Amino acid sequence: MKLSTKFMTRNDCYKAGRKITPKGIMIHSTATPGVMAATWFSRWNKSYQAGEINRQVCVHAFVDDKEAWQYLPWDHRGWHAGGTANNTHIGIEICEPGGFSYSGGSNMVGYNVAKNEAYFRKAWQNAVELCVLLCKKYGLTERDIICHSEGSRRGIASNHADVMHWFPKHGESTDTFRAAVRAALSKTKVSPDVSASLQVGDVVEVKASANTYYPGGAAIPAWVKTDSYHKVTQVISSGKPVVKGGKTCVLLGKSLDKKSGKESPGIMSWIDVGSLVVIVSKAKEAKTSKENNSYYRVQVGAFSNKENAEALLKRVKAAGFEGYIKFD
Ligand SMILES: [Zn+2]
Image (cartoon, rainbow, N blue to C red; front, side, top):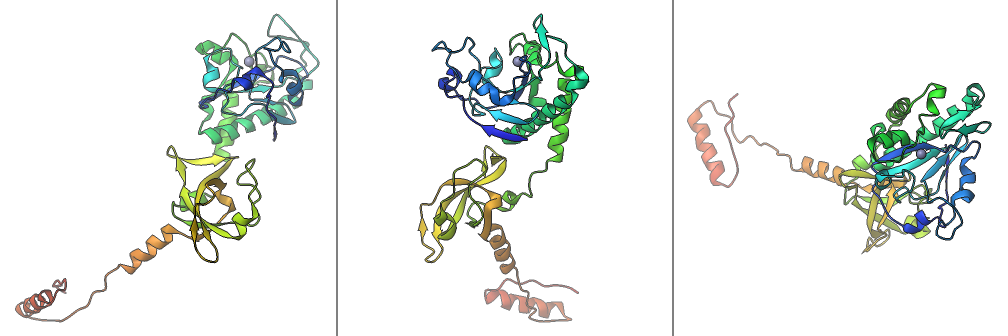
């Protein structure tokens, strides 16, 4: 799925600037036949206050059969639910295909299921993939996904029928959508987890091939790669690995000059662990030093007589050594 980002900065919802901690995803469909994801930008990047649009509405993303467009930061409070779900849920609108009209609110008139099946499958797949991405980003599961009509039944959204006025025409439902997200989540294994082996205090080098700190993140200046090693200063946040741009990241604090080894305050940037080469591993050091601490036993005598053995043990202890008698 191709995901592009362009924030609706003129929309009053964007300007309100309220942040949320995403606890779930609400799936909508547009009820606007034939208007695709990219087109919604010019439709909604307008100010209600300035009288440019007659609705106070904004959603995090639109998805169609070809792509997804993100129009609000994921942790920005959207205006999509018409209820308290705005405080907790990321809103995703699935664009509906053209060639039909609406009557009586949510009644699709002249909707050709066979003709629209291919469109539906692709848009569905893109919506599933976007949900998988967001679930991973915010530690959510398919159980945290609801559609607008379910939100309405729970009393956290306005009385709209989407997406259950549409999905059943293609033999699907919000339940089967959740099942598809669940299946996709179990298939997408987290990349071999380098973070599990990275610890605070490890010294790493940033790979020359790394261009940005993580997908969608800032560009990495050349000196960060060429002149310095970096110390890992944080690997988890709120008990979880930190994921940015879909990648597990660690925080790099102090920098170490590659030539002099001199420590400086460092870059304090989160970076995709896939962009790192481990130079000094705390875990390996600990293992090695443990091995070095292992005891060597020296036998100082072999006796057939117990008293003689005990006499020698006394002398060994008097000399300041730990000792014991072993019976063969
Ligand atoms: Zn809706």
